[in-house]
Image 1 (tube, one colour):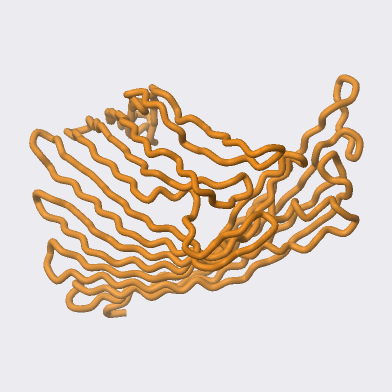
Image 2 (image 1 turned 45 degrees about the vertical axis):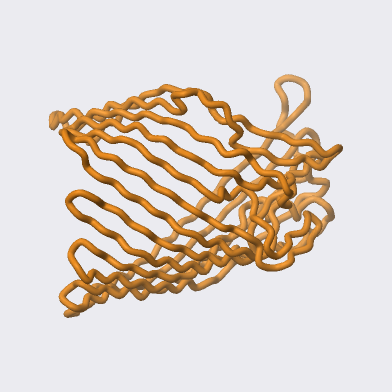
Length: 361
């Protein structure tokens, strides 16, 4: 069409997995359901979608409109044999149907400046724990009560691309419904996924980079996120109050660094900062404690060696070093609630040096 580029596509993906563990018996340990199996589980998921999107070009290409729609069908099934974690075996499954519309605008009043806006709806289906956790309590499995998590998103901002500076400032707003949370039951060894109310995420992101000389350039980014519950949610795994912070969402993150690129040689020195974030109990309920902020400094270098022989196009040699200052920090922290209340954390990785080789054919 004269001013339209229409895309139509589809995808069908079918996956299966088998997970089992057997604990005891005379050597060699036998595999006997109902005798020594902790679990014996077969899962399958069929994910299908079709989509249609248009790129409408107006004002000699300075204005673009992007209407689109995507239709999804997701089918999931779970079969568990009787075992240590399952007094009774059984089968559960269901199919979700949902539509995801989207719309975007891109306008360039000048060659170096671009204004953009986008809105859309996405959905995420529950993971497999929402299925296997309803099997085993009785001869007939319970109903699957976990609903898909929904997100209505809005983004708008401005980009600038000039010879001495590239920068963008964007604002975002995410309205989440049926938020997923997880609870690990140490008594049974099972993980349960459940819906935990609605929340609003909103904030801004700023990114900039500028060349210096001799292949060097500076770059940096800053992100601010406010993530709070918007509705009262009361359940067996805790209560979420309107205005309460969502756990494990840093309010501030930032990065800055120096890059070098000349020919096939590349190197970068990157500093990352992660601000404070609220933590939760092992049931997903936000508490009044925060994970301290932390920062790391990373280094990366690579060289691309062209070959063009024997079907090999190039070989890329890379060297990387994470947390080169060997900073001590906590990457995760939660409050355990049973048998007593205590904090359990995971320290961040110490200095780590590695390398890789990538061959491209």
